[in-house]
Image 1 (tube, rainbow, N blue to C red):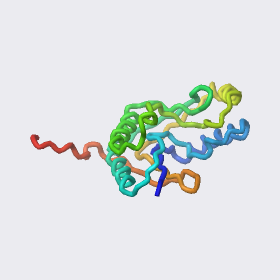
Image 2 (cartoon, rainbow, N blue to C red):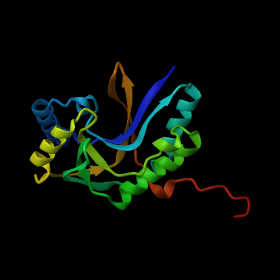
Image 3 (cartoon, rainbow, N blue to C red):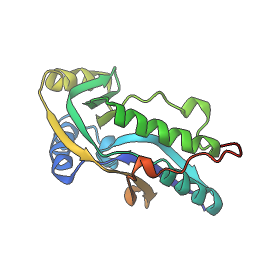
Length: 191
């Protein structure tokens, strides 16, 4: 048994449809298709392979424990890039998003699912083209999209887990936020 999971935020379907129009246009015009193999998403934790049922149970328990968060509004807007290989829609950083990602990372850290080189600094973004973007296409895509305005806002009250099934990322589970005040505290013998 080996399963591959992705922890992410998925915008509402109406926003995903808008993003897919952009991703499809880029794919057709520039012959880059890699981003279409994934859902439009904001990665909260890099994809991880889990090869035991016990580790999988620990993984989902840790994710449930990281879901103590208030709902928040997320803004995605305009276009940016990691030079020469990845074009994305900017995800505005806010305290709620950064705390949610930090909680997930903290709860999953004891499971040692990622080695240090994959334990990335969180730069929230929503990829629209990557991996198969050639340098000349990169420049052309950025020329076309770099100055375009794009802005969408949505409420976040859960995060998603996708599972890689039959060579595709499939929705697997949503974890709803829980009231942060209900989070059990650390037990202390002296309190």
